[in-house]
Amino acid sequence: MAARMAGGNLYNKAALDRTAAVTKISTARVAAVEDEIVRQKWNFEPFLDEIQVSTLIVAGRHDEASGTLEPACQMLQKIANSELIVMNESGHFPFAEQPLYFQHVLADFTERHLSHA
View (tube, rainbow, N blue to C red):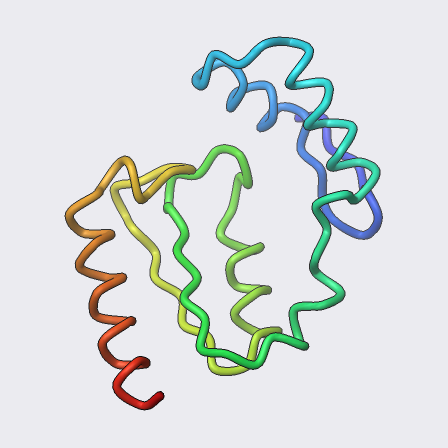
């Protein structure tokens, strides 16, 4: 599996290729996404510790795009007052793959945190 470090984040070319294959996006779009990842246009990791609101992190256990739950666990550690839900029957799009369970999780989180607002 080809992987390289992109600004301190593990960038997994094979995972990007698999995601592109199953989502049927164009080669040009894959190249654009790869460029954005490598150039860190989507890298908000340095700012995670600045988030000061309750945060729900949802991860699919079978997410081939990230290849592991490690990014979600890192977010959990860096964002104060965050919660991690791992959806065991989902991949990269838990909201679409398990919509009813996702709605339940989101409703529960929202109810618990909006009642304190």
